[in-house]
Length: 274
Image (cartoon, rainbow, N blue to C red; front, side, top):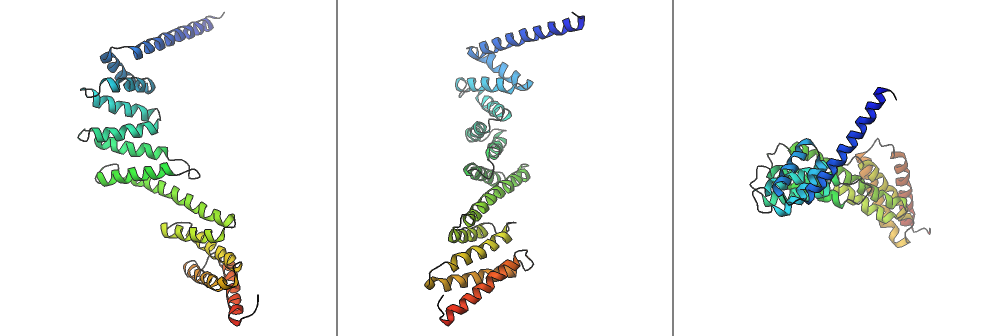
């Protein structure tokens, strides 16, 4: 066997033995009742970047040191270890408890920010349920109100913009979804609510277009005694659309709808049978 290959094999065996011994030593440490030694080891692991081991040790220490002189530091490092191992849900909870339990701590503001940040990190894609996104927005807004001079405010505002855009996209697709499933009355109501909630939305033009189109289909398929009122609403919605987006790519189609509405209204006024 070539000398270099022999050295490589020996080094691999020694590394494996060292790792095995390290794991056994760590498991022994977890079960140990030497809490001071465990605390020192947890700090060492944290400072070395071994956040998973640090997290497990700090979690183990949290109950033992409750009310003790080390309690605040353990709570802080436990939250940081959760954050650095991407346990965002648990980290958010831990930092929120920290900021309430230690309101005068030098880390109180940072804990409040990190609680909100971890909620932000938990926010799912806009296609999924947005309960967590709404909770994150609440946490970020509360932080901004509590610490208006914080250096984190620009960052918080960026997170809020991102999360609100996510909600906007979700609400827009729900509203358009009513049109796609031929629920035209629901589409009009939902799209109008969307425009009220998001007046500056980049989807404003499309939303107004779908209101005109959905309203017309709903009106033209209504009972005769309801048709006039509903067609007049479509005409009004077209006027708003035309005034806002005169050069829209949808203008030709909407103009055609408008002309059909006017013709149908003229028929109704003249008393002609449909």
